[in-house]
Amino acid sequence: MMQTILLVVTLFIGFGVTANPLAQEVHTDEVANIITDELQPIDINSAPIEQLTLLPGVGQKKAQAIIDHRQTHGRFDSLESLLQVKGIGERIAAKLEGKIRF
Image 1 (cartoon, rainbow, N blue to C red):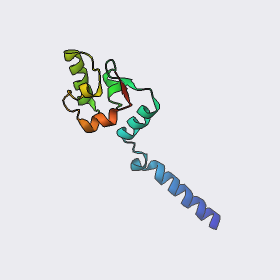
Image 2: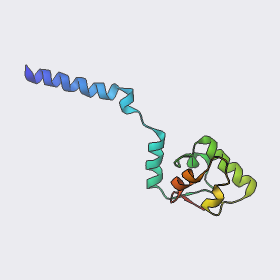
Image 3: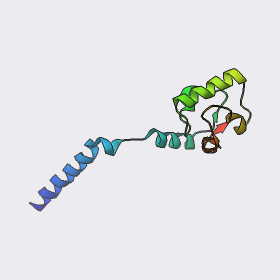
Image 4: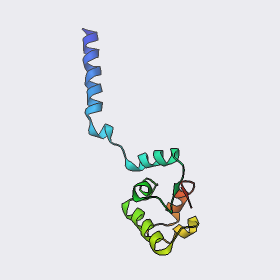
């Protein structure tokens, strides 16, 4: 009887955790950090928008701003030149250090 109760409780908890959408929620920032930590640095001068959005602190709008800026003003040659992009400040630049190349 006790084994049956333990089995039922274990199954209930197991199904409850896997059926719970909050338990399976994955944050894109966390995934992006994992992906960019394991990959080679992204070339900021040639990366498409999909790659740029993997960078920490860079969403669709900032990725598009990076692309627009490099098309208008040419290649980025340093982290400081990236600061000219609207929405990229010191804090985001610090997060990008080591994750991008020029």
